Length: 284
Image: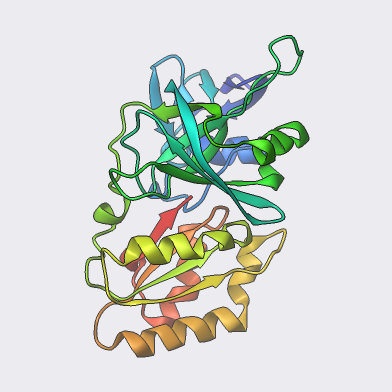
């Protein structure tokens, strides 16, 4: 092993990185399953928890300086929530409305776990969700079949009013500030989603009503193993050109709800349209 190679522990796996390497790039090059989005430190998708420093780090902005012990799970407080409503949205997704001790609101991240038999060998698993409710309202989240185990999907479908769930709420983060921090008040806005996030269109529309009267539409990228190829879609370019025309002289704001498309890739698409990088906002 190279004298400069350092061991990076990520949950139950071990990887090697060279001193000074970008942490995210090094992990991805070795096949690590690490989420990422903008690769510019804006979206937070690549957040990992450093057990040695007890701090969360943006892996895309971290240079490897020593051996590291990392986990994908950020410490959170777990609370019991009651199911108020369980509404099927389609064959592969449901909307849960939950009542419990939460001040989370639109854009905040929560983790939901389903009841399981105490004598079973199966372990409870927490699934990450985005809070979709306004501030002060009961917690609302969408669960999608593709992200759940087969057993947990059946448990999710069977949930009824007053059933109990464990919900982990992230600690040490500001709550309900997603749209506020985008600084998009009264600006024309479009939302572009990765394929799996197309279902969130109505939630974006409702949330943006409080911030701008100029929601100009939603576009879902077509499914592709390499999402960057979806940026070459003529339909996407036509959508953006129409939005620019409808926005008048005001700067058009873009929200990308998804992962695995970097800020650099977006910049190559948006530059000919004279859309500045600071008009693009990432949400994982």
